[in-house]
Image (tube, rainbow, N blue to C red; front, top):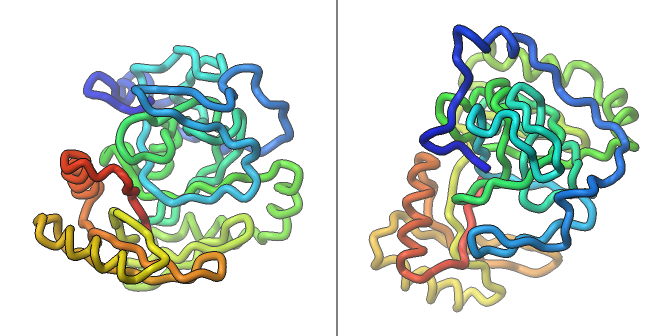
Length: 275
């Protein structure tokens, strides 16, 4: 699920008071839902695989949100969707899973309970409830660059206590800090640097162990008017990888357009990368 032209926020005059003070979820141990957890499933001709566990899951990408069009309808876990609740939809994480979502542009964070499947359109990694999107300040734009981190309810209480309350205050005080200063936002077991420059968006078209293969793909893409093509080399699992990327791209819309162009050319082995 994700917003469509017929979806949107609630009526400000009627419904806005319901979401004046949204409260984050508190992770707790729950059994897997009887519904929404098949090993695999197919939507719009694409097969998705449910992760056996959420342990260690961390991903950066584009978030979308869904609102009144789906309010009251059943989620994949057969719970009614509540646009005012702190929930989310994900294609792979077990239902339910608690996640911490950080807006990489402003450092704002929410803790959500994943109880639905989606998003199934575009290069999105998570669909937020309307209230969650509001707290992260991405309602108006429609999308946001986020980090999604699965939380372990069994260890959450201890981690939350050992992470002193200053980390939460840092998030709340971001708006009052000079835009040129970098801010470190502490997560459950790592930190996210939020700067005035913001995160960068790339479309990664391939990753190769051999530099020669990366050079060949770069040369192939260079004549297609897709923008800046670069090779970024990193060490992954003790092996060097050469990643061929398009970007950085100025907006999510630019990334979507680039992906559409690649698909039209028959190049489907790509993904959006946020750094």
